[in-house]
Amino acid sequence: MEYETPLFFRVMQYADRADRDVIDMVSGNPDWEPPEALREGLGEYADLEPDQFQYPPSEGLHELREEIAARRNVDTEQVVVTNGAGEANYLAMARALERDRGDEVVLTDPVYPYYPGKTTMLGGRQRFVAADETGQLDPADVRDAASEETAAIVVNSPNNPTGAVYPEETIRELVAIAEEHDAILVSDEVYDHFDLSGRFASALGVDSDHRIVTNAFSKSMAITGFRVGYAVFPPHLVENAKSRHMLVNVAGSRPAQYAVLRALRETEPEYYEQSRELLAERVETFTDALEAAGADYTTPQGSFYVMARFEGYPGTLENVERLIDEAGVAGMPGEAFGDSRADWLRFALVTPRVEEAADRLATHFE
Image (cartoon, rainbow, N blue to C red; front, side):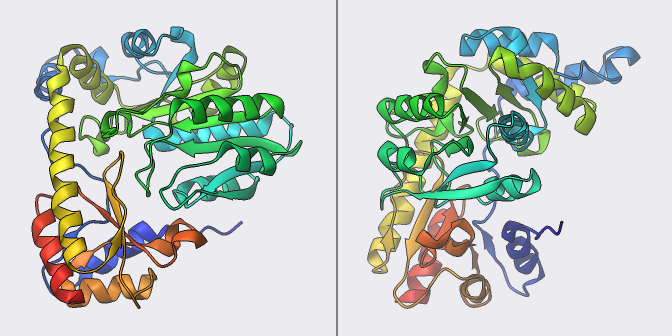
């Protein structure tokens, strides 16, 4: 089986090679400070005894799993600490496909490209359901697409790349569809702390053995390099997930988990509120500039991405490279997210240079 290098890396490599200043709006790496307690936890960890520098429990530090379980109102044994949300989604999709209930994975269009990539890697088949122009997903369309071959339905809210936030009624319907077809709803909620709409609803709010929820602290604590995520499994699916996790990773990073636990316990809600306020300001700044440039654009309800469409400038890799060379702004080609957004570009608002980037784009397209 052959694998393609994700376009994210190809764009970042191209930008790194550019012979001019380039503003990175490709990667979802928050540029703000992590929680103070996280830094304190790392410092504290450095002074621990040598036995604390050895393997942690494979499924994650017990105290961290307990803390997550208490916050998510689930049993500790349902929680597996993973190598970021990426591994959490991999484990969830693998468990769905391993049940021999079919090999089809229902995905949205537009879609975060790693979901179809994981589907292929796990031997599944992709089936796409189009979201509407605002990024919302109609459960009726998902029901029409689902069949006895459907092993999993994978959704992401708040959404990358559209910024859509699915309301509670959508989430409940998606769980119901999974139940009807003996499938698993995989709900990736990694942007839950970046809900700008007040409408976010977790799939954990629905009592069902047909949903797996994935998440991570990468975005919410601005620590994408720590690779601490988790998945919450139904009891009957969790043991095999733990085994696969052990075989693939052995275990996650003990110091990273230790620091995250300290931050979870000691970080006040104001930290997350300030991040949302900063993001909301950046959305306004960036979309105002796009408006002035005559572009079509999305206004995200959550996550931290804006999609833009410039007349006569489709969202191809070639045009993204031109934008790097000519405007000094690196975004993502819309074609990376599926056919429905092939005319668009996606920009991550996790840079202090958002206003400068917006000005560069406005000047380039005026």
